Length: 242
Ligand code: FPP
Image 1 (cartoon, rainbow, N blue to C red):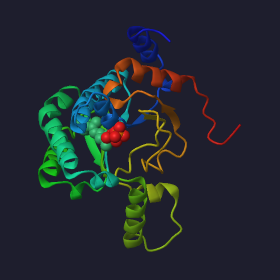
Image 2: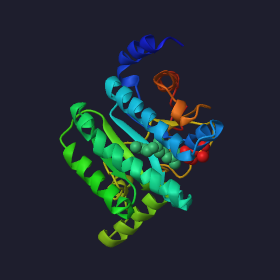
Image 3: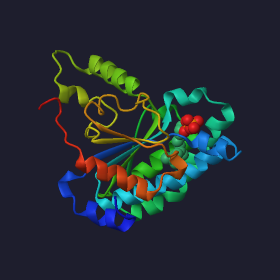
């Protein structure tokens, strides 16, 4: 298994065996808080520390894309206080960290119906995306007001508006996605032990390697992230072949 430093140097040498695109379903914030008799929002606040860790680690390893499922279209059904708390957390994160993202050469983008986010959060998101536009290191993709089914549906509707004659190829269809250049997900990590995809990047996860850890997101540390990537490097990917 190895220590954090050993894993870091092993993976730094893994080159093309590393996943190009890692996506994370950051689950278990609420349960982490409940176990400690704390309000759920404290779990989300602690979760931001794991976000920082994942961004820093992926950047150091030279991973090209890191997608984080931060808010699903289904999350609006949570209590109003929690939704507001999450939106404030997002806004503050973007406001506070944009300089650091830029310094670390991280280019921010987003997937989802982001135009439906509260005005202040959307404004901060647009600003951070614009400010990091020229960064050439890690691509950090935040999934916000995101649903995989909706992404496909939105793409179908755009195609219906713009394409006059079929049939559509896979690559032409992908050009209608929120971020057409986003490659398929190589490694999908889910914390908190749930064995579900939960409507996340359904198209892009068609052949992803899935890694589920029992750890709740706020307690997901660098060593856990490195172990997930190490396991990926040992998997044999066959894409339906033999
Ligand atoms: C799932 O845990 C987590 C979320 C719905 C939100 C994730 C948000 C963050 C980590 C913080 C903000 C993000 C950024 C990028 C600044 P859950 O609440 O469903 O946990 P539970 O299943 O234990 O209730």
